[in-house]
Amino acid sequence: MDVIPFNRPYTTAHATSAMTDAAERGHLSGDGHYTKLANSLLRALTGSHRVLLTTSCTHALEMSAMLLGVGPGDEVIMPSFTFVSTANAFALRGATPVFVDIRPDTFNIDERLIEAAITERTRAIVVVHYAGVGCEMDEITDIAARHGLQVVEDNAHGFGGTYRGRNLGTIAPLATLSFHETKNIQCGEGGALLVNDESLFEDAEILREKGTNRSRFFRGQVDKYTWVSLGSSYLPSDLLAAYLVTQLEEFDEIQKRRMLVWQRYRSDLSSWAASAGFSLQHCPDDRNHPAHLFALIAPDLASRQALIAHLGDHAIKAVFHYVPLHSSPVGRTFGERHLPVTDDISDRLVRLPLFPTLDERQLDRIVSAVTSFG
Ligand SMILES: Cc1ncc(COP(=O)(O)O)c(C=O)c1O
Image (cartoon, rainbow, N blue to C red; front, side):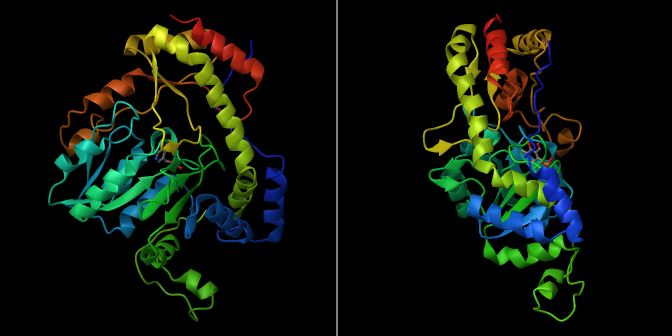
């Protein structure tokens, strides 16, 4: 029996010819022909006016921390149920991540708990749209405005998702995307910073270009480029941008195929889940998710592990997800937090294979293996 992997990165038919073309153009560093194409496709797809391609979402988050001027003594509120990069980006600047629990229905930061975590040191709130299900952005934006805080959307999962008619990644002043091979749209390793607050754009360009005003030089706005602030190198090679462009051109097709898989799981597993004591992540009616992942919540840790093992016996790779940050060796150095929902969901969550080329035969196999459990 062939193994069904958890993820199989989708590669378009044109990916390699686009990369060959990028190589033949002779501009292999960042910000070449394909980076510009990728930026304009991203602008059109996200609706964000200012897009900077980066080497990863991790780096786009690090840029966000620097752009907001977060530093030692500052606190940044975020979920613990997230990837390490969300916290690392701010901790690397010397700030303290303050972990807040998640909602039991959407698995997103619980907006009702944010105000209690705000102190006179709080500078920002970082939200993560888990599985591309939007956070309670109206409430969070209100809280931030009342307390004079910045908001960053870690939108690693949510490219293509919407919240009350707005695209995820366009609501906060800064938002990040991931093009890691596990994401809907991918180029192996890559990301983007969406700069929705125009006043941050020039600083963002400089930061990404090693602290120089090189982009202004290339636009003919200055006659030489100069070291003008601290910065680093966050530009991906144009080779990777070429690969990414072919994915962005097939955005609708990729999303459609993922959604078909997601809907098949939902329609074929919902009644089994209810009878077996499992539940699904909730996506409120006022938002759309981009079918980034399909999660089942087991009744307890033992049954989650048993389901993963059962699927393994059927040559199907299912996986759990984030290990809470607040109780990790590094997380604990920022103080003790009691986050029961995070601990609980992290223990019980299992993700099923989800990629655009999963075929009917494989889906039949997965559905019948899951429904034969328990
Ligand atoms: C919520 C979240 N943020 C950030 C990242 C980091 O993305 P990248 O691998 O592009 O740096 C991930 C990676 O999976 C993630 O899940």
